[in-house]
Image: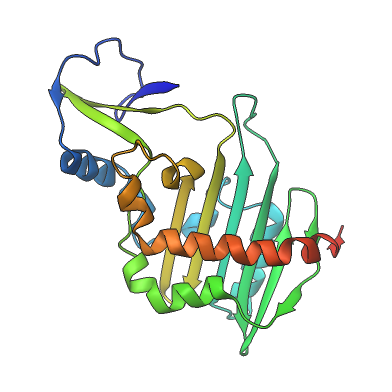
Length: 228
């Protein structure tokens, strides 16, 4: 199902057939400028003030890490949503990884539960960011956009309305380096998007694939070690 969405006002439009057609580069520039907050060098304190970034119990855990001067950690939060999603939907999993005194640890959080802390041999999720953070810092992941038109002060994008889309929030703190990514599964799946090949060519895409692979190896073990 296609949908037209607007960068200013988010108003539906029946006049998509009019206006100045934008080039791919123009769309890219406008989208990046309108979403600078996602790529600016914000810190973890600022990010955690956004309720949808992390769960309340995981925020406590992250703040505990910071109080103990642990500045190397990362998390990935996965949510499946659809038309029936409510504002306070709590159907998600969040995996928190950190490095302390040369050892790697991971903990799983949901809305009501958390697992015990599990020590792991290493975290490819953290290590990939460690090696590639300078490149990942400048990555821009663009949503599925098929075309764009400029209508006076508004920009209309034609994309696709997705149902039951898996949403990701990924963040990593490495000393003074911090990166936050928020995107939907279709950003890397919709081949009709102008930015499909651009998205899957980024280091961020490989970072996401590494994170998902690591979660797959840990999910059952962490789920069996949940505590209240």
